[in-house]
Length: 477
Image (cartoon, rainbow, N blue to C red; front, side, top):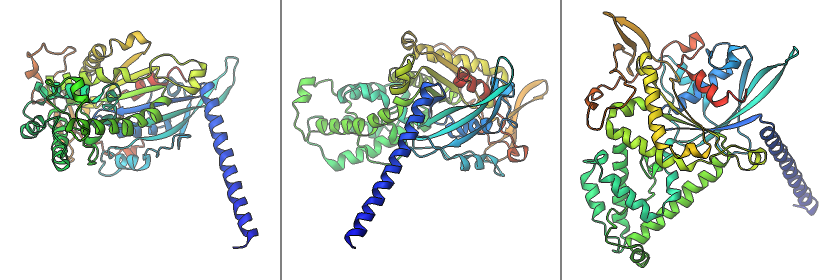
């Protein structure tokens, strides 16, 4: 290649970089202006296991994008005819993959319909919501609110408390949990091997790897068999990577000074390094890249599944709420903070799948969720963080009918068979400790398939998604 060709090539690359920099600068300036003018709101969406996050995102995007087909009477712009539609676009300045909306919508609209695949990674998207703004003196104009949605697995949320714990404190916390009733009897052989691990002994890689596989299976069993929520490391529930993050269960005979003086190749020092690597390499980058953008946070909860799993499952969910309470950036957002360091100014929890119980039980379910939040977030209320709770079904799969004078639900099970059922009545207060839980024992409602015909009807039926939208965006529209 001649010198002139090399110079020409370098010049083309430089011009290309300059165009890219100018484009990125324009995007960043637009992003900054939208935040300052209150035209952009960033909402984090996550869900505890089985809460239906992908389904809610799909339903929410569809409802806002098709206002002529949606039924959103609880969302003022839709009720007044001022919701003109919405466009889904990639999120600026996020570096995150987009939410895979088309295949999720295709799954719901298929014949037979099916539930969208669960998301296991973080994603981001922008929904440009077009609204008619009516002037006081007559006339109207169109404005756009940019709803930036950042979704991430609820299992990642369970890792956030690790930021406030060193390895020794985490071990003591996990030992207390494993000794409790909620986890009793699960994987006794694996727990015995873990308890026998001497903190001072030299670490053996093959032994630690085998223990990690057993411990990961223990965490999976806690989730699937006991419906427990507070499980760490959360990423172990989503992939098969060897994080090697194991708690030492008996540190009572070792002081902090003695542990600090152990050899670098000891079990304690080896596992403490892995713990730090996990927090610094997995948890901290996620928080820094994700949470610093959020204005609001929505957490989806399978309250029905947890309630019917029993007292220990509900206690564990409340424990999870309590431990994540201090991980959000609380407080109102001022003008400069709105641009540089946004903080969560509204935290919403939504009990999902309420179409599994009669409408008469929806309010009791919402009250139960509110009681758990009041206990777990009692300190947060004094730091200026408004809490909200709602009960929703992103896709309504059942209808109410009557048989012999009794109300019942009808729908299709996961195999497509038509069925009718009654749910055990949901009480607005939990039974006293050890009493009354038999009312919920072995009474969990069946899992339902999405309703057929949504593609033909051109709508997605739901329960109170409009109320959820009002809580998320009512003050912005």
